Image (tube, rainbow, N blue to C red; front, side, top):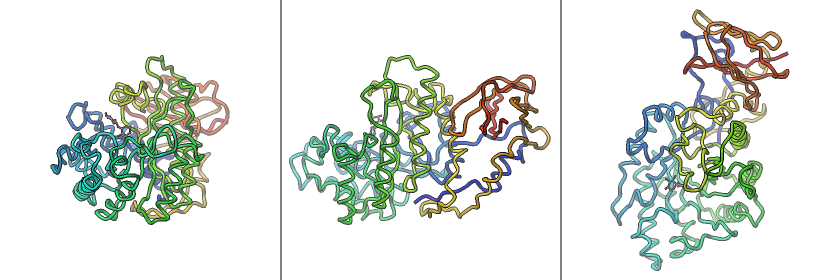
Length: 464
Ligand code: XIL
């Protein structure tokens, strides 16, 4: 279970008083640093192009500074790790594990038993149950054994449920050859090899309701049975590949439905993880600024589940930049939080500001067994309205609000963006004279981000 870390007194001092800014701007707070304050994991895949060295240098820079959990897009799948029978290939996975270790990131392993991306030699045993059992067990023992203690959690079984009606996916080689018990066996074998790893069942369309007719409802019944039978399952991964609501009339998923699943899983002592989030638009449509802002709101609503539900701890996005995304194949576009030029989109801001402003309920004390931190006292509450003046040492930036005017000292030409406490943008403008009228912003508490070139800082302000 995660620990609800509140913002420490030290961090608060830095944030509000501007202590320690030796340059004009402090280093940006990152999704990662804020995720860690909130005791959650925020991650993105390493795209296949990263493994082949086909990405610009700032991709990795962004990845390691913004995220604290990582998963390989394709490189730990069956066809990548055992391309021919009994011959294992770990080079790419090892490369990612090393990168994660060097950068203090958690590693997810994806995926052991899946019907897709299995090599042809496995499919040849489709009608031989005994052989297939041996193949799956041998694969798990080798792959999980190789990364034992290094991969913190595995998608042991991926997408075993049919998409059309609540039943098993009958075309899966594992289901056809072995029957539904392949799932129970895969969990037991994985646990036997690495008893410390967290083991997940992972699937998509789980944000579409928990009625018995929905996929998540069917899954819940199976999880209940697995738990009752002592099958070592610890988490459900919700892929959460969703389409922006206004461009798909048939879209029926929602953050509320996924939250309902999290709550049901909590009763079974099972975690919920968001493992492959993207929120795409239909290919070919013109995506406007307000579309991107609405997309940001949806990203935030899914994040709220992870922040607020005690048994949810992971928010993992299936890609970094829209330029390298699998969504094209789904007839979708622009589903990630960085644009084609690796510039943060409104969705990035929305997530960042939400992580900055989230205040855990006062009485939440949850013990984290996966992270090493100790409890920190919440000293933020009494300060929520005092962040109007910030003064720092020489060369620093000072901000001050009077009425609707924001005064900024220490910058020449700055872009100013104001967000409400849910991370929605409410104002943006340029400040070149040291003062800026925050037109149209109503009374209340906001986050303001001031950017000069690539440096930026974020402050809480109150408009009275
Ligand atoms: C996708 C990858 O992103 C693509 O590069 C690959 O061609 C197909 O698989 N559900 C999963 C992921 O569990 O493994 C899939 O990844 C996306 C859907």
